[in-house]
Amino acid sequence: MFFERSGLHIFTFRGIDVLVSFWYGFLMALVVFLWPSLGAGTFVGGVILAIAITISLLVHDFGHAFVAKRYNLGPTIMLHAFGGFTLTDREARSDGEDAKVLLAGPLVGLVFAGIVGLVMLFLPGVVAASPVTSSLFQGLFTVSVVWSLVNLFLPIYPLDGGRLFHLVMRRFTSAEKARRIALNASIFTVIPVAIIGLLQFGSFLAAIFALYVIMDNVNSLKTNQPLVMRSGGRSSKKASSFHDDLLEEANEAMSEQDWREAARLAHHMRAVGSMPEKMAEKVWTILGVATTEMGEYEEAMNYLKRAPKSSAVKKAIRRCEDEMGGTKAAG
Image (cartoon, rainbow, N blue to C red; front, top):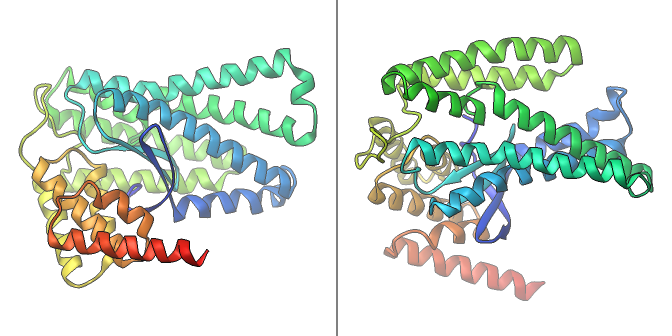
């Protein structure tokens, strides 16, 4: 549910693509425009907070992504409705690798918060140079600390804490039981978090976040969708029935020329676990062709370069090149 939307490619750093979804832009717009109405600050303060949130999330997710890249997992960062998410082309080979990738995000976030805190402590003139810099540093520090601690210590799935809790459970019980324990713990953890956020801080976003977590977790329990695909510390070579069903639905959407739905389903496949190489190639093809048909040519090229060079992919590449070339010429 969280990661089903396609995103707009905004930049690439050290070979890691960063995408942003429409819903992230919508959330930041809410922050900007609702901030003054909540009596918490001005419109400019809302803009500064949105910038601080975005920077903090990117630092956090580049922590995940750089470790994932070290293990050749093919990371991509997506800024989505409730934060950031690091997608990978391949699943980690072991729970240990997975844990290192998960821990890297909040730990890097805390280091970043520490650096910001040191600047605030020892260079107060820089921080207090203007109301903008003062608000920005305070926002960076607060968001980085809160987001890192939430991701480290709260077993809310699919946040880092929930994923780490699931990996711990896998060491003591069967994969199926670990999945049920992790998802139920997530549901029962997020409810009081939402109540506190709503009653103590007046945060309707906390309530909305909790609702989406509960719906996503309940759906996972009902569909038996796996949280990781590997068994016994090794990646699975066989696709799950859940992936098979999603792929069938995505192919149906492609045949009906429902490009957005096809892309949504393909992104969902990427978000819920690794796939056999042949299935992953089909997903890249669906994403590349669908986003081309949606007119998102730059994003489409990022998918098409990973897809096998079938006639449909070659045709989509030519179209993207023609469209992007025409846009540049017009500019």
